[in-house]
Picture (cartoon, rainbow, N blue to C red):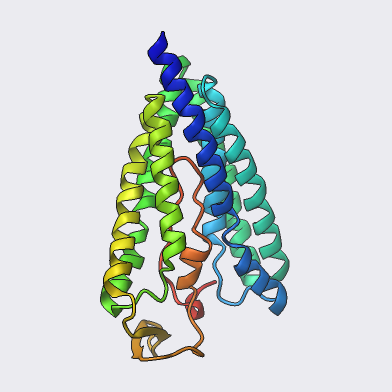
Amino acid sequence: MAANIHDQSFSIVFGLLGNILSFFVYLAPLPTFYKIFKKKSTEGFQSIPYSVALFSAMLLLYYAFLKQHDAVMLITINSIGSCIESIYLIFYLIYATKTARIYTTKLVIFFNIVALGLIILVTLVFFKGHLRVSIVGWICAIFSVCVFAAPLSIIRLVIKTKSVEYMPFPLSFFLTLCAITWFLYGFSLKDFYIATPNILGFSFGITQMILYIVYRGETKALVLPDSNNKVQLEQFPNANNVQQSTVNQNQEGAMNYGVAGMISNSQVVPSELNV
């Protein structure tokens, strides 16, 4: 009895801390949208991160509502996350080109109506009780693992260019701290659908911080498309006034693929090739 109370106390502390950290991570794309607002154009910024983030937050909300017990922390942050990501997407659609607007609308329909609707329908119709919770939990965990593999692209870019220009240390640090917090939250509740993916999350986060320490102060890299629409990497010793690609969007936006298991980075794609 005392052990359960002790574990619940820890889960509340870690849950509150996770909510606070995750809230600020959700706000990380604000500089990106300020740029969009100033230029009245989405330019090369992607809508994929925000579409997937909304899907992830809503999926975790569904899991939390099914779980019922010890789910308040998941419900609060993912409710907030769903609202924030919806605002980002609306803002994006306002300033996007016609092509990007159509593409983004298709993404939202696919992820948040078709995919999420299918998951809800199948699990409600064909499964009951604890089995339903387990299946949805496994879906969340598998999706989290897939998302957490995304930082491999930014890690690869850092190693290839020997530059941390596109990997700001503060955000890597807070994403790592966030993953550790949600791991401890899940572990304290014995909710391994939340805890397990975050092991991968903070492992990649620590790797990013080690790379930052190793390569900080190195020459900066310029990302340019070549004539075949492939990415070229050129080295410039002090390229302060060079236009950067949306590699920064990966860190700046943090690619908030949901919270409590799904905060990560997306693919490295140059702005000229984005939709």
